[in-house]
Image (cartoon, rainbow, N blue to C red; front, side, top):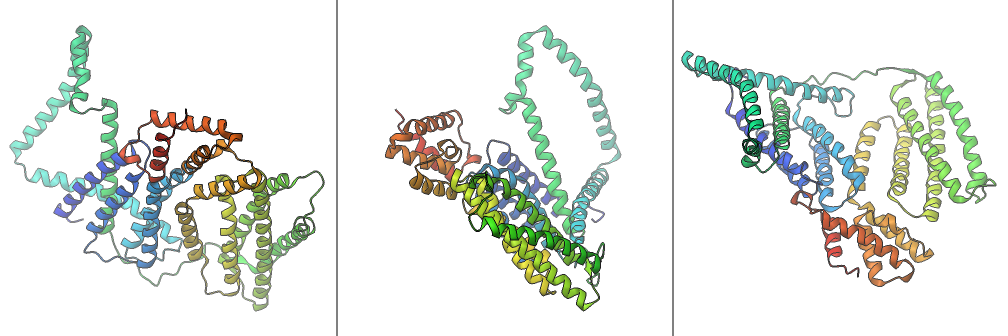
Length: 488
């Protein structure tokens, strides 16, 4: 930062203040809906205005991140899933920070290197330094524009305010105790200035100030501290694993997994189960164990491919074969886990926390397939694929409307078996719409149960009025259907 305040920094501070007001209005006034995408648009407008004359980098990955961030923010307007509502509250800000640092910094550190994490933390710490320098220059600039007489007057006024404050507190307290009407007048002054209780008004002001400084420091420091790091720096491995040790570990793991897979083929894929187990019990008992083992295997694979150093061609080929066996066994375990959960869903129906791990097994299968190719083609990088595929997978889950998929599958199951979980369907907006359709078709066997759940949701609708920040298309459609529904 230069030795004098710049007009561009003052404009940025004013813009950050307006953004902070929007932030407080968007996220602290009920359930978040359309306000999220509005805030994200405003934030990126501020960012690109600040960097309009500044060269950006990493355009392809930056564009992918930008699309995913906007789609995740847009999901608050389109859908109303509580799980993603909570998860995105943490994931979107993290992705925004990664995206801003990625496209703003001119260093040659690649985004898939571990050093990029230190670059992110450095950018955050630089924001505090930027704020300190800004206020130091602001103080110096203000003092230089004031003559000695004004400075002394300012100091005396400040001293008078500091001395009078405790005296006023005591006097106002005593007078309030002496006269009830005066006490009511003093307590109503904050509400006369703004129709918000004093404590809430203070909290909102603190939120706005803190967010203003955070965004101002972060964005301002990115432009001031952009330095190009030499491109000839090669990332060193933190640890190097010996090939013989790795081969020994892999042989032992592969022996165990081959035995396990042989058992799977003997009684699971042949539709023969251990005595005493039903399909549903067996499915629930084994799914998460197999999923956890698959994740452990993926960690082993990543560690071996990243840190193993092999000089011998024969040893390298042995490790490639052992890794291929490990991946194949992991794939079979994923298929087994997938079939187990599929059996469980057929018996007990579809829920969000059954469909989510179900989809995760498919994602892991894709990751294992790519890792198998990486084992035999050294030039491929796994960090690229893992990060990008995980980002796309998570974004896809947000935009595919999982709740609607679950409702559709449960309705298919209802048509085939006549069994339906009315209480579970009533927990999501697409489920409520489906229950309204069922109620209007008047299925006699579950009419009372549906009517009871719809009445509960309609009462909640009457009690809770939706603010503009909370507007959501799915929720709006559900509420309109409930308002027009006759439950008499």
